[in-house]
Image (cartoon, rainbow, N blue to C red; front, side):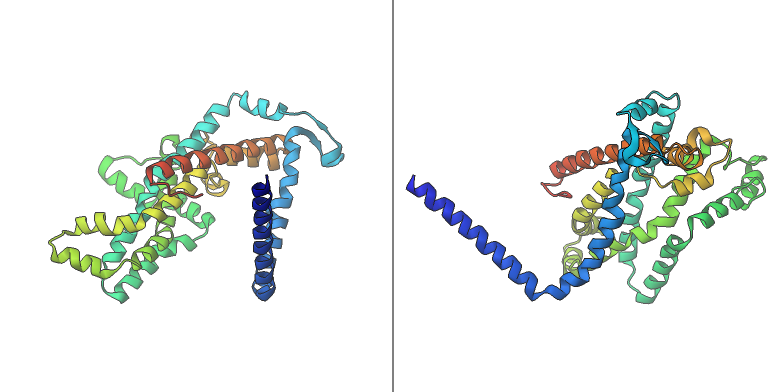
Length: 319
């Protein structure tokens, strides 16, 4: 009995000591926390406060009555979405577009970073990096316009296609080509910028490891597989978890800009559907329910992928 009391008092004293140490540290470095304060305030205002509006997903929202005055309907909007005739098509379009983009696009920045790491001329390397990074700074609107110009029946691409096949291909109106055009153009636009973190990681690899492996007779591929890739492994794991966790969060801008009346069967995704239902049709409660459903799926996927990666990556994951 006496020992337990002593242990509890010791724990309380230890906790009090840690708390006082933390407070004294904050007081000594208050300038750093003042620099951090604007970011915290902006995050709370623009990220956490808007979460209050998610409650309208469970209400028959009326702008006149307001959020609290609107009638509570529970999961009615969720049931409406799940039972709608186009639910399966929209969900599968979203999953396919994200999954294919992740599978095809995730390795490209890694390969690009490995190739850039092999370039020894500093000036040549900087010029190539400038070229591959540049597409990331092109507006999505401009990219969509370029696709319509280059892939139109009278465009450059179809001029080559017509030369070999005798007839043009309707890339932007045929539903069968929408995903291919969307994913490949996305890889072209983002691969260079996404490779920056891998290039920075490879820059920290000790060159003596490569020199020793070369002396031992290791080929280029062996050095990549046994030196470079192990160095990239932790970064790859974290980025893959984040990418897979946001697999349902495709931005509507590019899909909406590339969407035509003819390619809707494959281009209609959750993001564009929410935009049309919420902002164009004014059904705010229903669109909020769909967006909330999408967010819940993302959280579940994030937890699932993180668990799987931790088991495959010796306990290393996002958290």
